[in-house]
Amino acid sequence: MQICNVCSDQTPKYRCPACKIRYCSLVCYKKHKDTCLPSKPTVQEPTPDLQRSSNNAEQPWTVEDLLADDEETDKVPLERLKLLGKSEELKDLLRNPHLCQLLQEIDAADRKGDAMKAAMQEPLFVEFSDQCLKIVENNEYNEI
Image (cartoon, rainbow, N blue to C red; front, top):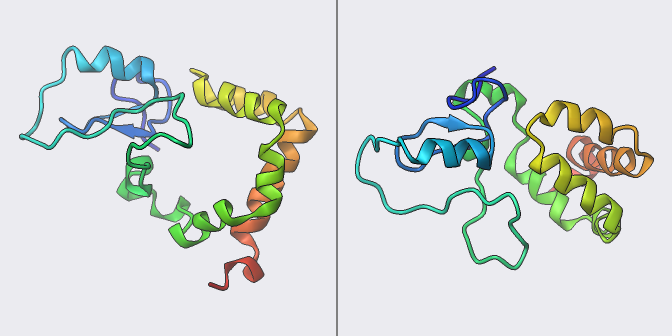
């Protein structure tokens, strides 16, 4: 498992578009950008925005942005991930403002593992998690 190249504490989920180092949060990105040394000239890519909205015109994250090559065994195939966006059950759950607040708090947390443990105490979050797992693990959903 990799660790953030900036804080050396969390699991990184972003990659600097200029120098390709991995970092875990917007806070770490802001610390890093002042000292970033691009490895080669690149086209300007969007930076992570933890408050990204669904109507934002920026490019979506790719699986490659989120996981390193050595983490292949932990990846959910992209086709299965796309099924999450088609689920009416998930859309219904995401209409709940309390669930949206929980998800935003997890995303913004410095210690995501601790935030996830706390969220798992909430029945609504457990229902959301179970529904996500049901979709990505269930063969009847996965027949495309």
